[in-house]
Length: 310
Image (cartoon, rainbow, N blue to C red; front, side):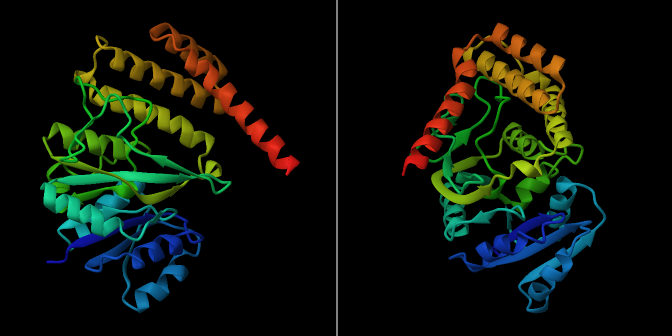
């Protein structure tokens, strides 16, 4: 049986998808197939992909637009490999990603694995992201096993897990019904929570294996608003896990409300934004939330000043 099936959903990513494909072709692992799901693109994606189809590099499927969850589920069902790997059409892998994640999965007998990644900003700066420095994540350095639901709760503000670093056993992801297609922006968060509630074993490798190319222009106002709505829907779906009797739970809840306030501010919903900021500070008064944006702005100004002096 084929080892790994790589599912790449795409919607109007003709300018970036070759970067993603080539990062797969540069992998040190070789026993894999590339499955591209075109989720109703209206650009020239098919023209870009055709040369890879013609030489047998990829399997290419077109479908009507249904969102990334729908596209990934479509790809999972078409996959012939025992392991499913995910890659977005505007991101990329480092060359040992598949080899190291597959080895971790096999040696640790994990149902799914993830790892650290680089977030690349528009100025090309790289920032390493990992779960190993998160207080409310349990991670065993020797066994590599990790748990997200500490004290019966997940944190709302962010998951330091990128879907581009994730490998799932196909039987395991089908066993939890894949991605919930009613989510448009939080489908990966939902998947991780379903996996943990189902008792699936998860492993984490504290090494960078992927690059998430951050594109602020790709996040529209409506997308940001949808993100908050999805997070609220996610919290409602897992409401039995909620509780406010632990300092990590309180802080994570406040962080989420603060994040919601920032998103409402971006989308010019000013009254909702103010209410969120006030509520977050009432739940957990944290000066760092207030000073962090200011310190970031000051740091950028200093860097710009000294850069101009050189």
